[in-house]
Image (cartoon, rainbow, N blue to C red):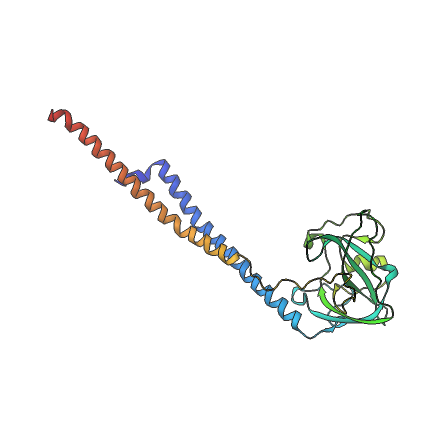
Length: 263
């Protein structure tokens, strides 16, 4: 009664089931690894945010590529803002997802090197190509504290680095690009300002990165593994149903053959 599983239809169904099981198991592990990565990322962010601030000159240098282990690390820098070469970064959102600009101001250290400081978010005006109203940076020597961030690239951020932008507007925060623009030596990466906070709230400080939620990846992993377990169970259920239907059909055929003989 189980010879039907050797028919073309059932062979195809069985092969498809055999292919689905390892694929679903692999997808489950893929989601599980994403869950592990998210947990590790959250731990890294929390540890770096809580760490005692260190001078930015100790963790980066000109041309330095900030490693992931140093992302969001608390750093400090002391210098003087160069507002004449301040630029704004286009298409950035605030904490409520409103589109505007980030304000990027060079901070000139005592040795002449520059730290790029992202002072926060400002709204744009009616004309997106016009330079927005930007609050003046503090004058004189200042000490700033913030989160260390890596240079932005199109490949890493997904933001296309457009050419022909209005004066003093950029798409990416990149120390190499700003070094060329300033004609100065710029430390790799940039500082995302957290203190001192502006007295009037503008530019709007950038919120801490999310390091509490773990996302749905673990739930997705369990779902894929349950699907993988359900495939053989479903195959068995279909086989038994097919067997039962064939038995009933055979019984009906046998009954129909006996009826004329009885008559």
